[in-house]
Image 1 (tube, rainbow, N blue to C red):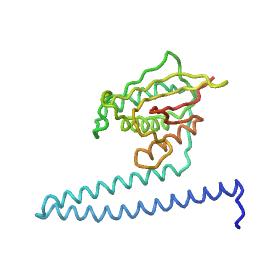
Image 2 (image 1 turned 90 degrees about the vertical axis):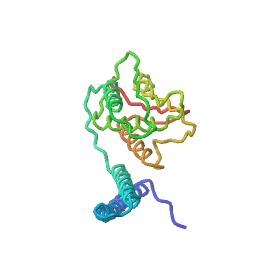
Image 3 (image 1 turned 45 degrees about the vertical axis):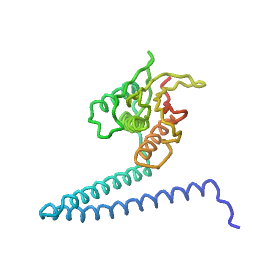
Length: 230
C-alpha cells in the first residue's frame, strides 16, 4: 500500500500539477492559433470566390469559436499564474465600484442577458482599505458582468442593484458588497470552471481572497467581503 504523502509533499505535487497544466494549456492555445491561421486563409479564399454565402458564414463562426476558446484558455493560464498585488493605502472601495458600474453602464450591451443598468447604493460610511485598485477593479467588473448574466427575474428587467455597507467582524471592519441575482440554480460561480463566465468569476474571487477577503454566493445573493483599514 502506498504511504500517504505529507502536507508539504502534497502541496509540492499540486504545484507541479499546476505548472504542467499551464504548459498543456499553452500548447493547446498554440494549436488553436494554427487552426485559426488555416481557417482565416480559407475564409479569404472563399471571399475571393463565388462560393455560397452559408459556407463563408460557417468559416466565420468557426473562427469566432476558436477565438472564444483561446480566450478561455488564456483565462485558465492567468488563473494558474501567481498574482502580485500592488496595494495602495487609502483606496476607496466605493469609488472603485461606482467607476466599474459607470463604465459598464456606458458600454454597449452585446448580449441579450445584459439588458439593464447597474445601480450602486451605499450606506453613509467610508470604505477605505489597502487595495490594488487595478486588480480589484478588474475583479469587480468580472463579478458584475457575471451577476448580470445570472439575473433571471423578468420583473427586474435585468437591473442589478449592488449594496455597499460596512460590517464589524470580531475586531475587524469589512466592506461588504451584495447583489441579488434571483437565479434559481444556487451553484457557486466563484469556484467553478463550468464556462467562460465562471472562469472569470473564479479568477476574480482569487483576487478578492488575495486581498484577505472572500466571495460567495448564497440564497441567490452574490456577496464580496474585503478588509477595511482600522
